[in-house]
Length: 318
Image 1 (cartoon, rainbow, N blue to C red):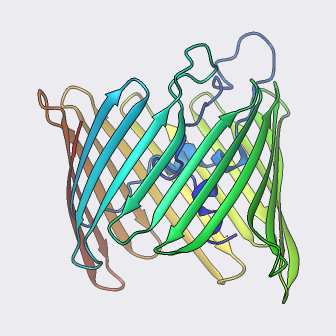
Image 2 (spheres, rainbow, N blue to C red; image 1 turned 180 degrees about the horizontal axis):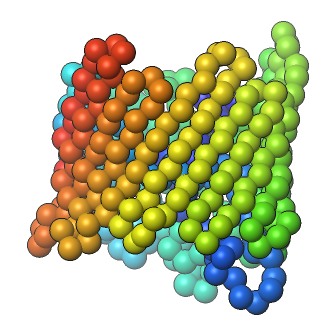
């Protein structure tokens, strides 16, 4: 899939433009019915959210809510390893208060100082069917156009994605997802990726499963392209830990990562740290600056193998 499907398939706190309507936790259900398992892309999300996101340079983000359904933000980023940039972000929110997902973004646009544009749209065709479209340009060239349709049943989720269709070059990427709740704790499913071009054609099948305990989640994806396993554990209200193992048959590389998150509600602070097999150690501290409507973000990442250090400082206002 590569970068083509990165906008929709990469789990994480800030990689998806739309908030996940997570179903009620499987260990909280009491009516005897099997819950909806969510999306295939979100299988590893609990573990991914524990890890810190790398920050470098100085970043200032100003967020402003103009109305109940319209938000904008300005982001200034000064970097020593990449060109400094400015990003303008706008969201048009859902205004129908009777809809299933009140407040969910319906239209999102973002443009930076180089002229690159990201545009996303989400449409709820019915209570169980939703469609999403993603467009991305790199300066004056289109690099991604992607369409997705998802159906969420009472105990299963099915989705089909078409990316970068090109009739002239006879190329397209198709992705099909399916997840089924087998029991209140067990979810099984798979992903089929089909790509076609003038020079090559093929498909990759990946099987996935997730087992949930009272305060932990174990997930495994395995297929021709490699394997991805994760384990998430919530020790208490303040501490969460996650472990990831990834192996790729294409790059012939394996990585092992450990991350943790510690929340201090009284101090209004959240700290996330990580350590992986590539000798990278990092951490990010987020501090709410009360009574100001601002959050201070400080982060540092050290690559001992490459002898590199990256330090970042950010402020989110609004």
